[in-house]
Length: 163
Image (cartoon, rainbow, N blue to C red; front, side, top):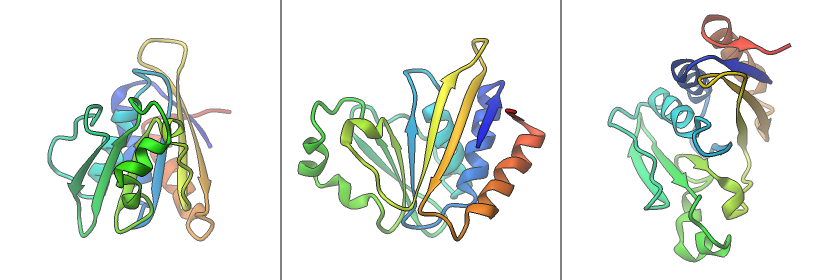
């Protein structure tokens, strides 16, 4: 599914729509260049899961946990990993696919691909504020239709579905 977001607010709302369909054990892998909107999308997901406190990018801590509505949201930023083994040696990978939802920025740095997951690719579009957002669901077959409907309903109100 591809969407065109014309603002950070629309990117946040699309993240919120996806987050509203997530459950414990799910992961969201966020791909994109620096400044592409990964953290904005992650904050939308977390807010939908009941996280109420401010959520900064955990760049210097690898992972920051947040309490949501009945589950923990684990926000990872793997940008600074120089080797995928660093994630495994840290023991933090145990929080991926476990008792909460993992939001993982720069997953390629940790060679992470858990199931079930949503892969979200954010790319800059034609102007400074616009982003093309492509979402692929893997291992979520039981909820894929409901997630698509939630994303498309959001897209009708806030982001434009790309042809």
